[in-house]
Length: 415
View 1 (cartoon, rainbow, N blue to C red):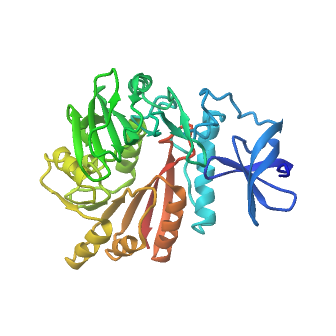
View 2 (view 1 turned 120 degrees about the vertical axis):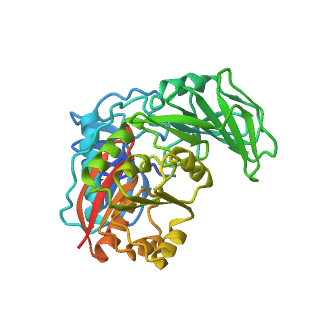
View 3 (view 1 turned 180 degrees about the vertical axis):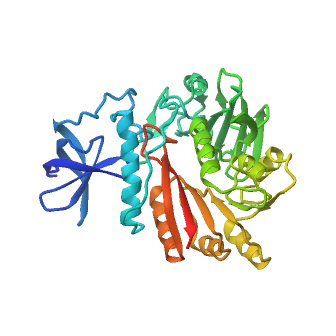
């Protein structure tokens, strides 16, 4: 088999996904991980398509002043980080540029008003939740970049210190049936271990560390092995119960900045009717509700709804619908409900078309869209614009330092 060709490439811009982009001599775009815009590199192609290619750096011919030495020995082999070779200030400007590019190319917005990226208070040790994969022989680790191969590790520099203490103490029996492991730490220091897999009984594992643990098999049966399968998280001085299966932001410091931002940009008054879609455990609700007259919240996860009811029990002007957005929104429209402000925080996949259509049928004057994927945001934003909404501004938040993932808050106004 012939050796892959090598090409001299000048990298010119960031691409969403953790790669820098350049052009081959035939005009095709080439995407290269662990390279930076402004660098010139000898690149070996690893994937070729008619209109683009992917490659890897063989050698750097010119380097960027923004290049730094990665801190983690697993960087490049583990798929969890993408920007450890990039100075932090440059990571922030890269994410701003990527959001602008996605809105322009996918959304068709000529000059979107993208504000500077809000930095994370901590660029290492910020994650309160990490996910591991377990092989049949009991080996555990993270997945490799662009593949399913397992990379054994014994540490993660993105994890909070308490989780880093647990990692080297984890052991799993061969053929235990465990496939995924979730480790989450509360702001009180308690650690929750959630084991997921195929076994019909609790698996064999060992950890010399105090924790709460819940195991959930694929047939839907759950086993509480120790303690209570929920943690306490504190945000802006307020406590939240978060169960094992409930979503919660992994970076509390940035979550607090995002909440402050929403409270600043939204016109919340005692007469405001607020609709929150994908409310989760009530993280945003808890800070928005005191400023408005009525809150309608929608969440499909039973675990998150149970946590929501505990976390928001002090309020008597909140209605929670345990349903999907596509189910609840048409029902609200049929009841004649009309919100003044909408806050959306969907999963990475964004809004399903039927949910988006049902939401816009309510004709909300103002929508704040919290997104963790600028590509699906740009897609949904294009649909918003077609239905008469104007993008006022968008702010990136660095919820995930050292990675290509980007949290944003965009504000949409009905014209």
